[in-house]
Length: 302
Ligand SMILES: [Zn+2]
Image 1 (cartoon, rainbow, N blue to C red):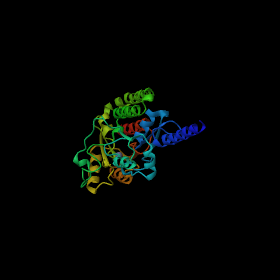
Image 2 (image 1 turned 30 degrees about the horizontal axis):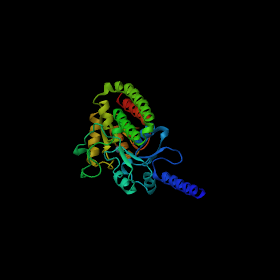
Image 3 (image 1 turned 45 degrees about the vertical axis):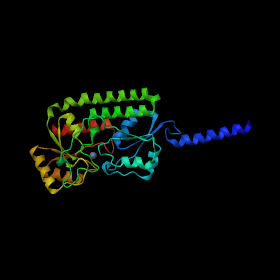
Image 4 (image 1 turned 180 degrees about the vertical axis):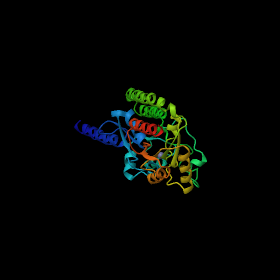
């Protein structure tokens, strides 16, 4: 009897070790371990997952989200995750390979932009000489800068989390409804404020604000293209200067990650002030930053 008991105890201990390594749940906290890519994806997953989810963000704050490559440490964390949450549409060209490299069979990818009505990029949105085919894709990936799209992303996160952890589905749904309410509040506050500025233009660092413009009825012009390809050609800069003059642009928006010096030059050239806009892909609280961006754009159009 004593011997049998011992074997059972060893087997249990071995199982405990196996469970700890299998990655379904974090052994210490009992939370579902997931990996997230960029800032908006991480925030949405954290908002919906609440204290049931341990989300590890891969693309660090302050980095150029369009240029990220995972480190070995990222890969270790990813291999212990149950879900890899991405935004999609070329924001995470590294994701498929990273997932494959982990060899984790149970790891699923949840693409939060699924189901959003996408903005197709014209040839001219890609930099001259750039192959349209490769990793970037044909659609504007910056979906999270639309409030409606944020709700769709949150719904997708809820679906993926509930599928991975059905015992918590009610909890995730409640978090989704709370988030939906916050977004609708922001929407009903700001959409009317932009009614007087339909078709108005603003100039920004990189073309990240297409979905915001569609939602608010505005037009963006940018120093860099949607995939942050680097400084513009002299010809493109001339076009920007002409555009700013024709549209009586009084503020040029800068982004720290997207050629701020060119934006400053442009502002000097047309006698405009400079102000920052945050495309959120690298850092910033989602709804708070949306509000700040809105206020700054409104002020520039007064
Ligand atoms: Zn971007």
